[in-house]
Image 1 (tube, rainbow, N blue to C red):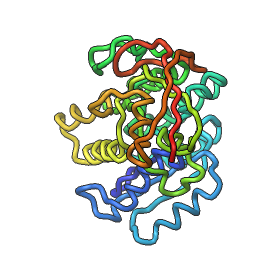
Image 2: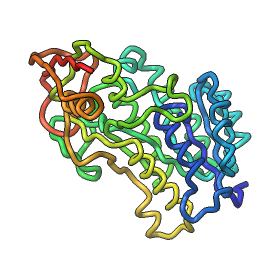
Image 3: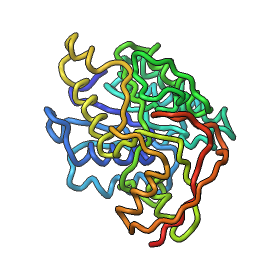
Image 4: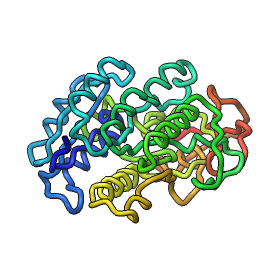
Length: 315
């Protein structure tokens, strides 16, 4: 039975984006709700110390958070969790994913099992839980650029993109009122709970390359988006969905939406910006051509020819 207090389930809560979203929901109430009028079920896969880290930040918040360790690829455990909790849930934010393309290429079965948790999502749908699914700009092949949600067809080049297309198809099939957010590359500060254990972003990779020659692709352009912007977008959808349902509200809060910044930038552009901002303007580079370990798409513009540059940043 649905509760008078909105209940959200967040998958991947120990991941980079999941930690930022959970932290925001704990410390900043959604508009139109009292601080205590929110209950969150935070699912995580197995990060040691995560429940304790969340608990340590709950002292100044009245939001109720239940942390559950759950393997989304274990159908029996997932079904047991659904049977126990799903009836009271209102919304699911599905951010759990195996999101490193080269890892997905090495183990496509594992990537599909985690990125498309069929038993979990179908179980939620049976209890009329609306789903906000996180997808990617890598559902496109990059040959065109400037893609539009309602115009351009998907054509993923790698396993990661393929699993996200499968996720989108499932989420849309389960309910026309569900939401899918296709994000470009997300950059921002370290995860707030366990930053040393959560997967970082490209910025943190750059910071780890002190005085080391590093290859950065120059032809893989992305519409970079800030972590906080993504969090605010998800919060906007959560807030709209929690409002009393109207036809107009449903129209504006259902379907597939793109999340990206206004500029198309390459990996080299990102690296230069990061080191210019954080460290210095000193950069030495030499051009070249090469191939990545996994298929890549040129999400924003241009074509992929495997062009790259070697850069060395002096701190």
